Every structure is written in structure tokens, then in C-alpha cells.
Image 1 (cartoon, helix red, strand yellow):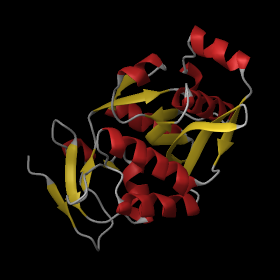
Image 2: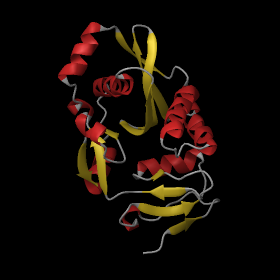
Image 3: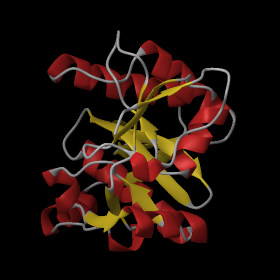
Length: 214
């Protein structure tokens, strides 16, 4: 099955079920707010490196965390009892995203390009993207950002500056979303870290059912 090429002037995507086995669905298009909202509403997300065309992915098997199933280990729970922990939402979205970029860029390379920073900043200004950071004893320790559509959070990246910083940010996000009856935190891909936090595989059809219900 050939990879589809998108028209920059037409906000549309091919049937997501036509994606390649690795999840690649299409290339091209743009990162406008309208296209990004259409993409995430159908389980599609951009992922590419600097210098590549925009690449759009829709894996047939999805990895998510249900907010009600977030796992807090005994060691993390003990840490939380010893410190003053609070969530900071949208302190500075652009700064949080840039911190995520720098942590990855310095360690292993990153897909968070200049265009991505501008695009998700525009999503945040439009009310469709959110950053959550963990504040430990008054100090920002880690954070994450993602897209918010309806009652679903589509995670993009995270960073940690201090012990447990990103773990706490994810826990605080889940607890916040649970109170608001969110359906899921979309993790895009499996990692051992996300599995330890309560992640699970679901099919694309179940994934879309969750989006449709919330």
C-alpha cells in the first residue's frame, strides 16, 4: 500500500486504517491548527525529524493510560508523602515544550522541531494543548505536554529536571484528568516507563470508541 501524499491546501486525511504496518499513513500537508485537530480526532499524529517532510502516523495498535488506572509505586507514594507536591498547569506552555525538546535533543535526538513548537504553541493558544508540570517543595521538577480534544489527552513528550519529575507530572496529570472524567491519556507508543505507570495496549477500534464517547 503506497503512503499517501497530502495536499497542503486541503485539510483531509486518507482512511486511517490504510496506514502501513509500522503506522505510517501519509506525508506532506501542514501543521495548521485545523489539520492537527482533524488528525488527533482520528488517532493520527505527526512525527518526523528536522529536514524531513511532515510524516503522519496512525498505529493499528494503540498504547494508552486510563486516568483511573494510573499506577503509583510504593517508592513514589513514599516520596510524595515526604514532599510538598502540586501540579502546575500551563505555567508557560512554550517553555515546557522547549524543555522537552532540549532534554531529548541533548540525549538522543528529537522530533520536536521549530515548526512543531510553533504549531503546538498555536494549539495551546486556541485551547487545544496543555502543559502539566510537577512542583516539588516549590521547585518545578518535570513536566509534559499534549493535545486536549474533548475528554481525551494526547501526550506528546515529557522532561525531568529532578528526581521523579516526569513521573510526578504524569501522576498529577492522571489525577487531574480523572476528576474531569477523561477517557484516556494517549501514549502513542509503548515504553517500559509507561508500562510501569499503568499503560496498556488497545486496538484502534477501541481507541476510536473512547474518543467517540468522551
